[in-house]
Image (cartoon, rainbow, N blue to C red; front, side, top):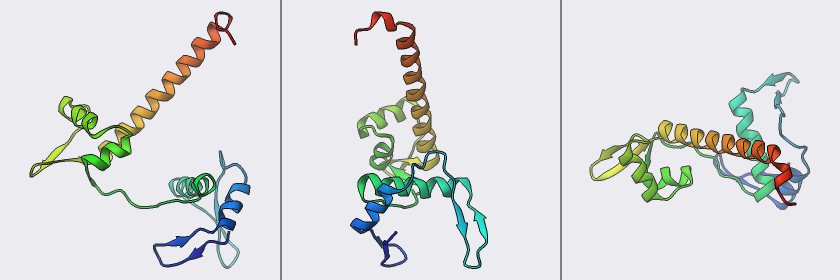
Amino acid sequence: MTATLMTAARVAITDATVDEARRAPETAGATLVLRTADGRDVSLPSELQQMLLATLQSVAHRGEVVIGRVPDELTSTVAAEMLGVSRPTLMKWAREGAIPSHRVGTHTRFRREDVLRLRAERAEKRRAAFEDLRELEADHADLLDD
């Protein structure tokens, strides 16, 4: 790829880089191996591979990527954004005990681990509901119009 390292924290993604990312093979089920300067192949840890493959997909689909570490403690606005819900919905869930929260002065904060756990749980529920819908559709295909 022809991305240019601007600083330790910034990489310029050119149109050529986006085109190369789009021509890259499908990443589903792919693994990455790092080839060192002396020619040795080093397997990368699974989480690092997932992050790099997600980066490649983001560049291919959107032409951009932002990588950063999520802080240990999140504001309600950031937590709601990560969960894909409105801030009032998140605050309702906190009041109902669906997600732990704590106060810092007058502000409500959420632990990163709690937000990521809830996000994973919600994704799993959506996946299971979709599978149930597919099974229902398959079981009753004769009743559905095309």
